[in-house]
Length: 152
Image 1 (cartoon, rainbow, N blue to C red):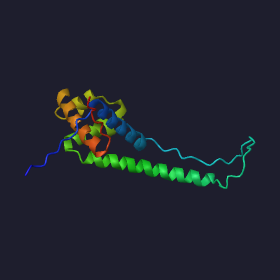
Image 2: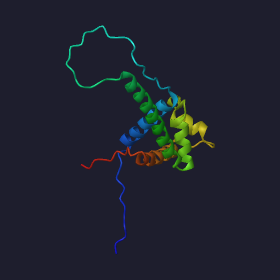
Image 3: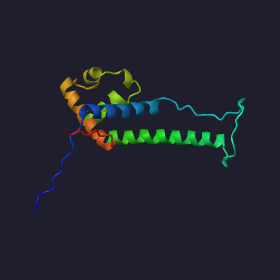
Image 4: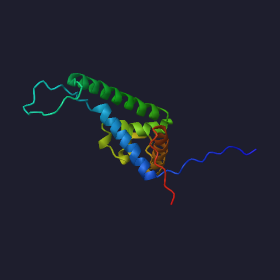
């Protein structure tokens, strides 16, 4: 009987890294920027509108309320999904992702600041890059944003 074997796909590291960083950037935007709710227009338009009956009624207030509720729920669920995926990482990888990519000031931190000052004792950039790639690899699979290398 042949043992089961699983071949994980070879990932395009550059594109996978970009996808994970984009997801974490979106997380920061949703988490730390306030959501501007839409408001219903209460003034009429001075333009004439020539069209026939469409047998549809429009309720602008309901559409705005639905949009506001749906967008807030989407943002909340997205942030929770990212946070759950990061919590599944081993402690060192989780610490790295939280400090470098999920903090409110993450946009202004560099990798060098993180591996030199956040970790005690500081680590080399080579080890940092290896740990970061391992974290990105796992996050990409958890978030289903893996970019597989195309075979030529």
